[in-house]
Image 1 (cartoon, one colour):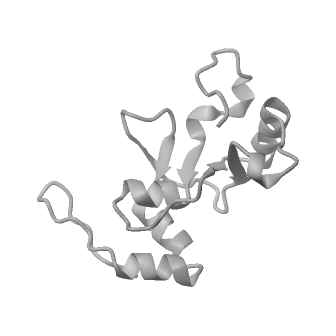
Image 2 (cartoon, rainbow, N blue to C red):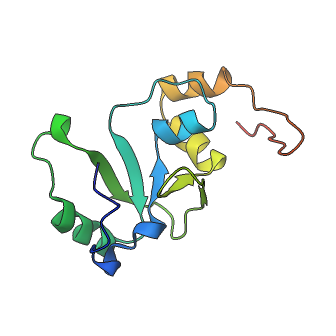
Length: 126
């Protein structure tokens, strides 16, 4: 995992705009899926992606990667901050759309019952 705690990162990395996506973000929403070992992030721009690859060094072998980063597929993806994390986490809608791309993710979404605890109401849209 890149060392996000360093304060000397180039501000052009826009670390506060990175959004955790993929299985780890889905698990944080309580979706029953076994996450991949490597965390995945959206970065806001192609320029940010290029800068991050220079700053953190690209892994030559995928098994050695600390994380995977890619430019967000939409201009302003929405993420939510959680006090226990250094970065934003993808919203439930983004997680659901990502998971819907394969049978493993579709099954996980079908097996998940959104919590109804009064403070937040989640309505199925998948």
